[in-house]
Image (cartoon, rainbow, N blue to C red):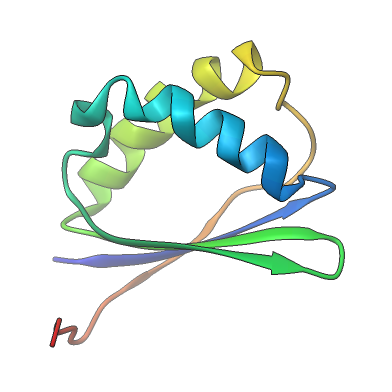
Length: 92
């Protein structure tokens, strides 16, 4: 079952995101199971929205991203991402 995930990253800038994203692109297999990803600047940081093929894919990614995020200096607050089962999605 597909999963929709939303994570708020207060205090994270687009430059920090771009640095992390460049590092993640070095290991594209880390995105296994990711159907869609959107990063949106907010008034206090960034909001991340993903659609994953399954909760297991999302959890595997979360476990892999944390050490990489810490290696580029991102280990601040943000709390647990919100995840919900997807009823339907489509890509035009």
